[in-house]
Length: 224
Image (cartoon, helix red, strand yellow):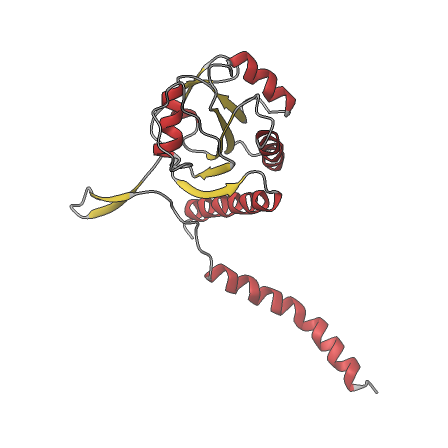
């Protein structure tokens, strides 16, 4: 005869797949998309109603590490991780770039995920300097972009579009921005998250939330 303990053990083993399935279903119903950051306003819809329009990164024209023109159009329709750094930085930037290499490697085979690193020292960070820096961190061509160009344009993006600093400035010679933040953008160039780029655990969260965004778009495309 089987002892009650053996019966309980066998029963528990048989129930595990059912419990796992129920947890999956429960999690599916509790699925919540990531927040959208930044100001929003109401706009009149085509049917006469009102829609909520969320802040998104505006058009820009910069220069990439290959010396080519880099515009916002390259990133629309993609999930993007953006940061602001400079190549001669010896404090937080090496850690940030090391963590971005982790992100790159996690999505090396996913063309929908891109990385955009803006230089906050564009005078010294020429395209040639950024190309050398990109090679130092094994940046994949067409995956991880390094941007230089007009300082005021880059600083306006940092302050007014990405909101990575509350410190005011004019983008002039004495103005300087230094931030450890990574910013996650969705395919509509809307901000979906902020992360400390020097903290591996925060970057783990970033990678998890990229997966959440990917799932969000998969659900939309499947109509579920």
